Amino acid sequence: MLSEKQKMLAGADYLASDAELTRERTLAHTKCHEFNATPGCSPEKLEILVQSFGSHGTDCYIEPPFFFDYGYNLFLGQNVYLNFNCVILDCSLVIIGDFVKFGPNVQVYTAGHSLDNAKRLQGFEFAKPITIGSNTWVGGGSIILPGVDIGENAVIGAGSLVSKSIPANVVAVGNPCRVIRVNE
Figure 1 (cartoon, rainbow, N blue to C red):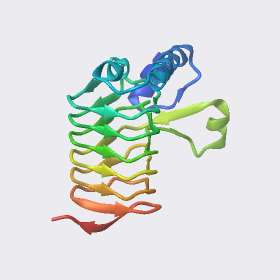
Figure 2: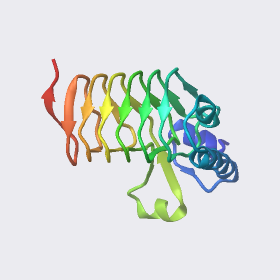
Figure 3: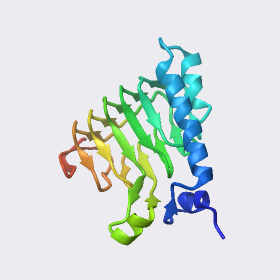
Figure 4: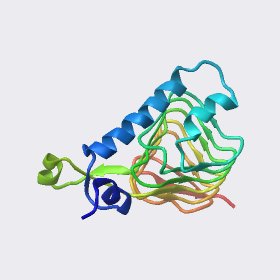
């Protein structure tokens, strides 16, 4: 019998209210609070967060406030910049490549809820991984939904709702987000 955490990590329906997952989220949220409440910017301040991450590259910078659910599913490349008020629900893997930039208020959701009302009423969720390729810029206020891959060198316009994967070397915008130009 799989634990709820094992189900979550495997992409199966799981109960987020499970005691183990609740404990892990509480610990992660405590780290976020500590980071967000610490004044200034320094490598020591960033260390509050990155101890929780799956991995992180050098020269990453995260503006507070910043929020995540677990941390251990979050993998940052080198020279990643996350602007103010970023939210990453990392119930599944979130892989962010090198030299990725997020505008303010970017939200990354690996977690979702069933369209089946009976499952939602029982408290079930699902999680699908998200990958954001190197050299990508995600404009402010964009929302990236479960299971999306964004290719390298992509630009996601501000305010976009990214519900489907976006190829490399394009500019994509809108709700729903769609390719409007190929970058050469």
